[in-house]
Length: 63
Image 1 (spheres, rainbow, N blue to C red):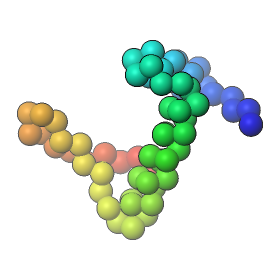
Image 2 (image 1 turned 120 degrees about the vertical axis):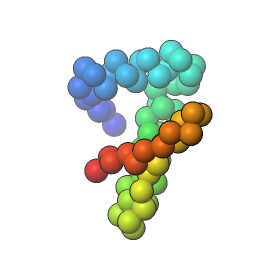
Image 3 (image 1 turned 45 degrees about the vertical axis):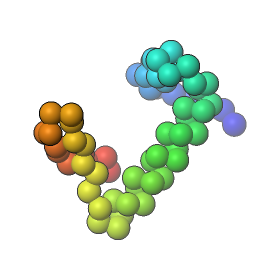
């Protein structure tokens, strides 16, 4: 399978690979799994909440 990424996505993929030392394949597989989970949860009415170490939290809208 060949996937053409927009330049921003390509750059982000490289940055994540550099930071985590994971392969690009591993990162894409994890991203797809996470996307599937988030999409499924939000389709059922769940909210995705980010809570920072400071205690601040906010709802993230993906879709």
